[in-house]
Each structure stands twice: as C-alpha cells, then as structure tokens.
Image (tube, rainbow over the protein chains, first blue to last red):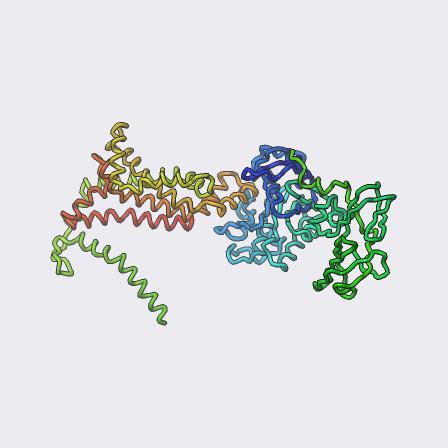
Length: 351
Length: 255
C-alpha cells in the first residue's frame, strides 16, 4: 500500500560533512514529487536517508505516519531505482525483476509470472528470457524499474533514473514513469538536477539548496513565483529588478512599475521569456547582445544600467546595438517575499 | 592465415613449457633406471610408487591435507572481513596494515618458522597440527587478504544497497548478491591460500618436528633418489590439480 512520506528536520553528515541541514517536507500518499537541486545539494543523501542507507544525525522520517527510526533498510518497504541499473549479472532478466519476491519467499513459478507482468508494464515483454548482459542502458533501467515495482513498496525512490540515457530514451522512460506512477498510485520521489525534467516529472517539485528544501510547490510556482532570489536563479529567472517601492510604484529605467504589497525595498522577478520587445514602450533599452538559438533569440538588454535578459521569437528580434522599448507584463512580474531574502538563503545558521 | 598459425604455435609452445616437465616427472616416477643420454628409461618399475605410498609418505600427505584445508578455511573466514575493510578503503592508514601483513612474506619462511617455534615451544604447541596451522596462517593470510580485497569496493556495495532496498535480509543479501559478486576472486584467493600452505617448506620444516608435511619429506629425495621424488611429486600434484578444478568451478557457480 502506498503511504505518505514526511521528513521532519532531517540532518545527516555522510563521510563526516554536514550535508542535510534540517530537511522538512512531505508527500501525500499516492503523490509524486521531484527533488531538484544543483549537484552537492544533498538530494541523493536525502534519498539514501529515506531508504535507510544513510544514518540520521537528527530529525525523523515517517512513512504512513510511522517513524522509520531504527527500522532496517530491508524492512522499510522503500524501493529505490538508482542512477545505474545495478542488475545482477548472474541472473537472467526475470530473476532480476523477481528478486524481492524471492526474498519474500514467493515460489519460483509464481514469482517469475509476476515478474513477467512487471516487465510487460515497462514495455519489455520480449526480454523475459534474456541475460542482462547485452541490454541497452535504457532497457537495463527499465528492468531496474520493473524490479522496484515488483517489490510492491509503500514508497518508490528514483535517483536520477534518466541521467545516463540518451535524449530519446530519456523522453520514453520519463513518460513511462509518469504513466505507471499515476496508474499504480504509488507514492514517488524522484531526484534530478535538471529543472525542465523536474517540471515534467513532478506533480510537485521540491528545490533543495545547501541541504535544505527551500520551496516545495507545483512546478509552475517554482518557475514563476520563486520564494527567494536563489530559487529564482536556479529556475532560470534571470531578471531580478531591485529598487524602492514608493506609493506602490517602483522606479525603473525611467518608467514606473506598479508593485503590490508594502512600500520599501523590493525585488521583482520576471522570466526572460516573459520580457517582450515593444517599440512604443516607455521603458527604453539598448540591445547589448543578440544570440540566435534556433527556436528563439536570446537578448541581453541594458536598461538604465541594469541588465535584462529576454527570449523573443526570431522574427521580432532587434540586432545588437539597437535602441528599443521593453515591456514587462505586470501579470508576469513577481515580487519576492521578504526584502533581505538574498542573505537568508544559504547563510542561515544550522539546526 | 598467418595470424591463426602464429597464435596456434604460441599456444603449443606455452603448453609444452608447462607439460614437458610434468611428462618427464611421470616417466621418471616409473623408471627404475634411467641414465642421462638415453631418451627412454632402461628399466621401468614400481619402486618409486611403492615408496611414495608407504606409511610415512601417506602420513605426511594426510598431515599436509589437514593443515592446508584448516589453514585455508581459517584464512578465508578471517581474511574476508579484513579484505572487505581494506577493499572498501575504510582505513585511514592502510599502508601500516599492508606492511605488517607483508612482513612474513619478505622474510624467508624458514626464518619466520624458526621465530614462531620459539613461541610455540613456550605455548606448548610445538610439534602439533595447531602449531603448523598457526605457522602457515602467518604466510597464507596475507595472500588471501591481498587477493580478496580486490573483489570488494563500490562495485559490491552498490549491489548490496540495491538488495537492502528490495527487502533482502542480511543472509539473503550475502547469499544472492555478495557471494556471487565476489565468487571468482574468492575462488582464486582460496586456491592460492591452499597452494601456499600445501607447498610450504621452510616454516613446515622449522615448526614440524614430529609432524612431517609432504614438502618436507619430498625435498631430500630430489638429490638422493629422483625416482622417489618424482613419485612423491605426483602424489603432491593430485590435490593441487583437484583444488584448481574446484576453484574454476566455484568461480562460475558458487555453492
């Protein structure tokens, strides 16, 4: 049965270095969250802690409301799909998939039949009697997925399951993971370092920076309504406009932008793809750089001394050196909560 | 195809290099008289075989077998955890451990045996199987550990983590994951351990006293009576070849 996961102030230091600094977040039963963050943020460590492969310094992890403290990894009912498939070379594909059933004492014929069903689910019915040697990377990762599903876990953890695959295989397996998770209603946590992949894989996305979850929300919120400058930067919100709000207006590049909330210092965030070029606009800018990159043109604009990044359709792109007007659509402007936000992320004391 | 011909002749040459001395050994064991220029012995006979299967030689064979089997079993049981710790680089200063392990291998084994005898006498273990086992362990353990440690490391631990997450109990994990993963190296380490003990001369001579081992009674005959030495050597060869067969088999499918 699928169970809810809850992490409460989880701290851990693999190899002696403090990596998890008080992780708190939860996934409801049957939910699918993606844990995203730069390398070294502690994503894999958190996954290992949940699976019981990494001891905690402090905090607790609950599965289905029950603390996992002191529960041995093999009794947690938490299955892991690792970045590498980790198949056993001396067993054939079906026996690899059926490993958890064999451990549970299911008879050979019965467990092989159930393993075959799992292989069918991951689209590998033709590989039943194959040896694991000679499978492609994508096929091996599917076998690993089938093996994890065969354990009928309460929680499924996937650690960068697509990282080692080429783009086409990645696309296929991503679709498969989302479809199977929805079908089975299995509580799932997926680790990735790729923000686009996070958005595509997760119902919700948790961003981990320096050993903490800084925002756990629906994918769109992380891209468009980041809670801090650090979140904004990770999700490619290249434009952070800083200034003082007076009477609800922020002066910027000779124009005034209406800003919700109290007067005082504010940081506005807007994604490059939401910045539009409009010759009639009051906000004037000089094009510093114009780079054609296929489906869009990347522009770097100088707007009264502040740099603005924009992504515009190739047809409308002004050349470098041109003077132009810039529109910052109010609907896409997001005021970061908290003015001292910048300092808060990353430097807060631990504990 | 000159390439296959070259490979075939290289193979024949290599096989001859190993097989010819053995062939001579077999002929020599059955030659009651065989003087130098002749390619074939003048008289065949069973004198050597009779000597080789006499009481004293068979006792030595049995002693050697018992000692080698016990030594190998202990060395693998004790060496496994040690090899694991070293192979997984869990020690901060493995260098010191390797130096201590290698020391008996750097000193001639007769000297090691002599030193040990002094202790065994004081422990009342001289001239006993226990004394011989202890003396051989000093030499066998480093070999077993050094060979076996190469089997351990991330390659095995990642598989064990996988097994844990799939609900395998520690025993199931060891039986289905760890053992198959290290089987080829374990077989090699066991085979080597057995052979080192089986063929150990220096420390066996120093410690042995009343309990003679096969190499100790074989060596004097090499000069004095090559026919008996050859027959004993055939006796000496049998368990080694059996061990090689077992090791090759175990490497493919353990247990």
